[in-house]
Image (cartoon, rainbow, N blue to C red; front, side):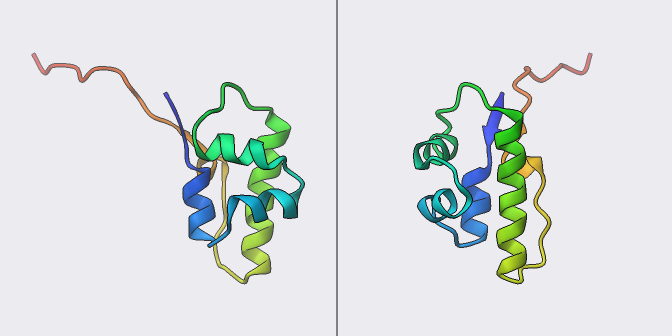
Amino acid sequence: MIKVTLGESLKELALTQHKFAVTYGFRPNTINDFVNENVKRADFDTLDKMVNSLNHYAKKMKIQRHFTLSDVFIHVDESPEESNN
């Protein structure tokens, strides 16, 4: 399962969805869909732009933090726990 982590990254930067979208040229609905995990598919260019935009904003605000793709989404294993037999 894919879990979207973009909202947590925006909170860490004290950055609203709207400001992030407008400042970096995303559709506000796109950012809202990501944050609310209403995304069915994502374009690699969009994901790359999100990571670069998070890093740009962090640098602009003098925040010592490097964002990566895992700050936009992560994979969570849903497989049942295997028994120790």
